[in-house]
Amino acid sequence: MERSGNPYLSVEAIWSRVGCVRLVQMFFGCTTFSLVLHQAGFSAAYGAFCIFVWCFCFAITTLIVMCELTRLQSCLRGLSWGNFTATVAMLATLMTLTSAVIYPLYFVSLKCSSTDCTTRNYRLAVSVSAGLLFVAYSVEVCLTRAKPGLSCSYMATASGLLKVVQAFVACVIFGALATESQYKKYVATQWCVAVYSFCFAVTVLVIVMNITGRAVTLRCPFEHIVVVYTVVAILMYMSASVIWPVYCFDSKYGSPGRPSYCPWGRCSWDSQLVVTIFTLINLCLYIADLIYTQKLRFVAH
Image 1 (tube, rainbow, N blue to C red):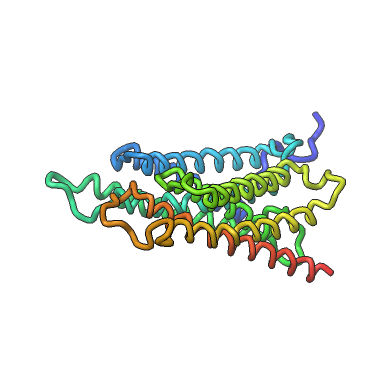
Image 2 (tube, rainbow, N blue to C red; image 1 turned 60 degrees about the vertical axis):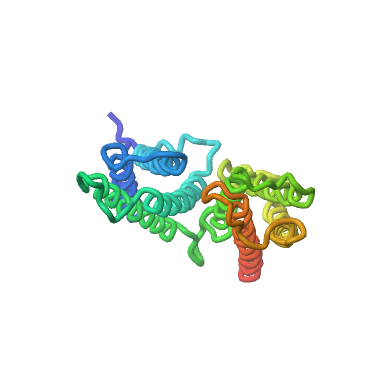
């Protein structure tokens, strides 16, 4: 028998710093959703979202570890593995952060029920485990992000990570728009929705192009196109950041203050406020993206 060049299994996938962090992610991910399904429980859309996040993150991390352990990622010709893992790590960080905030906010109470404290204790354990899961994904992002002087994937740079955050913030905006936001009342607010949709679609396209490796095969300079799009996105978000608050909170079109009759959880004013806040957040993210890109080009030259 001839000895092969490389062993079938890559021990580095487990014993490296990133590999150990991923094992920790798998442990806390499995622990979190197991505690929820066993005794802690969940309900409504918020609980379903949290359990989906923990199951999804556990599944995708397990898939990444298995692929790197068995070297199967080398068979995925239409996938840029470095861009894919960097995107997953950033997305999982944002999703686990959201679920780590939502679950204790809606399901945890320090007071016990009239019979026993078992459910409360399980839910407290879920909250702690969810927080540690978020920390584990944050550590992976820190370990795999671009370092000065070292070659890396685009999605591991600050610009690539910011694109994932931009897309995630846009999803939060869409969620608020779908909850009694009343954006169809005026053409101006419909323009804002068009801004959010266009920028989200193009940002996701940029991410997909990098993950699939198509960005490097284009005949035109992809980085230049992305910079031009970022400038356009900043201008569009600047218009939305002005138009949306005016048509939602000016007394001529909307309500400056929260109406007293507005029920919590089903109030259009609350949804409009959430859209306003996250519109400004995304505007800042696009500006930061452009500044970082220009700084990177300046340093490169």
